[in-house]
Amino acid sequence: LLGHADVLALSCDITKKESVEAALVQVEAAWGEAPHGLVNCAALDSPPGAGAEENGPFEHYPESSFDQVMEVNVKGTFLMCQAFGAA
Image (tube, rainbow, N blue to C red; front, side, top):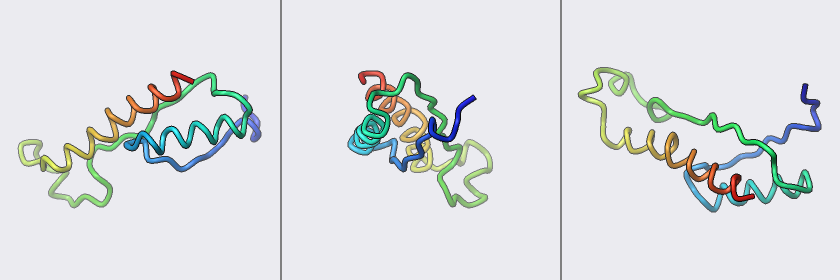
């Protein structure tokens, strides 16, 4: 089991490479080394604050909402794996 000293909470915009890299620097500074594992669990099914109409039939799902979902779910995972994997 992890103790409280084994957990570090950071704020990071996973869709921005600079933010991901800054988070990695903070982890390395706090722990003195790169992390040994990464759990990617950020995801969207629709953008935050989306109205009920965006959660209706897929055929009417807005393209702009789809772009935001892909930005977080795919690009965010890619950027996190790329930065933390290289470390």
